[in-house]
Length: 248
Image 1 (spheres, rainbow, N blue to C red):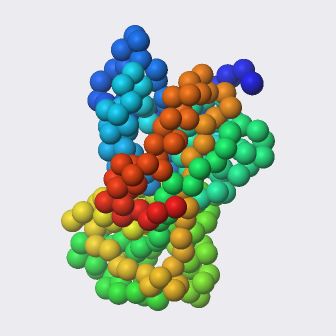
Image 2 (cartoon, rainbow, N blue to C red):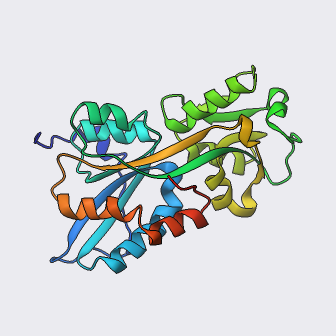
């Protein structure tokens, strides 16, 4: 195992949230899960149910773009489980021997989010050519998927900006700074009345598969493996489904 030498720069990004809402006690095992930003809302619920069904294990989460989290793992950040959107961030870690076996646990598709009043009158993917819209950076899974979507549908005008992760895209839409943003279906559901969703037909849409793996440097290998296994359980799959995620 590599020694943990977590660069100070990563410390400013890694913000952990305890799933149970309280500090772990002295006798519990803590599992730190680094997860894609699009999992923020649903993993809070998954974590609560996991801790209820696994006494003695506490879970803390940190959320960011998958590529950002992968780099933190390379730098030795104290992460036990990596849950990525897509394989672009996970596969290199597997090749580098930094994570163990990979488990597919959910899928997601893209959707257009607009402010509630839909000022650009976006009715379809084609309308993005005539409005101001934003996407994720093409180094993170939501950005990779968005670029594939735009190319598949012949959308030529460049986005107004490339955001760090899908939640940053959603923030710009909610703030009414742009006419539209390309996010995941689950982000539109989580945002509720703060945005309006414009569906993209399945035949021209792009799907993303979510993956999870235990890091090789994890100090809580068994507890971390228990969390990864839980993601494919009926309980977790039901929570994921309610949030708009598809089956793996």
